[in-house]
Image (cartoon, rainbow, N blue to C red; front, side, top):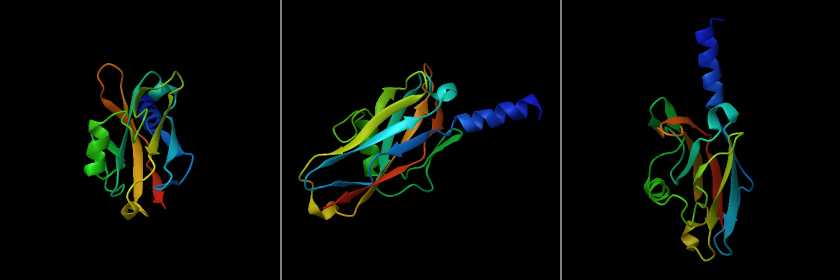
Length: 149
C-alpha cells in the first residue's frame, strides 16, 4: 500500500482507545465506584491529556469534535462532567496519560442518592487531547454503569 494509506490506517487504529469499567453497576443506597481504565496506546496517548465525560441519555449520535466523535449524547450530566473535571463524581477525569498511553479515572457515587435514580444508566467516554495544543486526537468507546438500589 502507498505510504499515505499506511499512515492514514495507522492513525485510525491509533486513535481508537479502549476504555474498560471494572463493574457494571453501583448502589445508590450504599454508594459505590466504577474504576475506569483507558488504554490509548503509546503512539497516540503517551503524555497526552485524557478527559473523561459522561452522559445520562445515551451514546448515539455522539458529539463530533473535529474528525473525532465522542460516543456520548450531550446533556446536563455531560455539562456537569465538562465543568467539574476531577469532581466528586468523576475523580481523575482530567489527567495526563503515562508513557504507554494508559490512564485511570472513576465514577464514584456517594451513598444516599435519590431512589428515583434506580435503573438509570450513565455512560462515560474519554476524549484524548494532544499535549500542547489540546486538540482532540481520539475518543474512547463508551462504558455504561447502571445505578442499582
